[in-house]
Image (cartoon, rainbow, N blue to C red; front, top):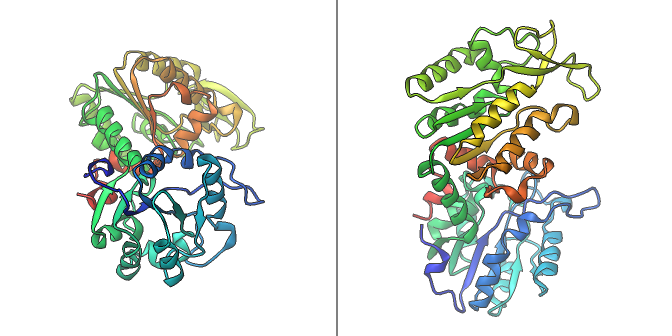
Length: 391
């Protein structure tokens, strides 16, 4: 990828694809502005270089229609507050009125466009829409890692028509952090994978076997692996059609000398509810009809011991239903072990980023990815379409 650092931006108009898909409350107020803050270094750098900035993002799922509750105007206001300079706002992202606003920009000024997904053509990667976006700029900058696994107009299509296409600071940092942690790690590499379904992370599991020294599997997805080992998980969720696949992954890991760790005890409940009756049991003591909602303390200690020996740690997916406090202990224990380790640690975005925040360890992690889906895409060994478009 060519970096924005590699080009002269003085006096040029830059179209910057950011990810300002921000959480909002019912009154339309931003509840977490971290995604805006993550772009401030790039924006400040470009303003100092005398560039004209056009920022574009999506927000929510307006399904190709204008819906004011998904307007990016609050993001423009918040960005202005953080930068302490005016940020102009366009009521659309294409059209003559938008072109007029872009053409009126002076070096050092910023214009934020309205939600890209107010146009159905964005998600469809419509060539005409992509060209209309490209016509707004001299340079296209992708700084939206979180959507770079999407083949959409503002991510890949625009690069076909833009005169110059480069990577922003955040995209560079994400790709470099992945490479440092997985493809060129300090050994041993310990990968912690959790979450609900094997199916959603099957490709990542298989690809990670090329790199890891130790693989820890927790969360509901561990149930399918336990079932492959002959454990009756009773009412716990399993993917019966993937039991054989789970067995193959374990066999492959054994052949390669990879330690593959599964839970040895579980926190089970009589129903999926924060007020359910629960108990900690060994694998052969799960009551009929009960379901596993967290790893037990013995498992957590075993996982922590493996993490303590790591040179590099990659974590993607919680160990249980961490959203319910009663079933968050396993995730907390693993999070604490990662935080206490001197190893280079990378946390995948999405639910894992939320878990890291809930566990209070974000300041002790080497790098927390801004994109869950994009991070998982790279764990699967795939090239991000948004990155490929820049090459």
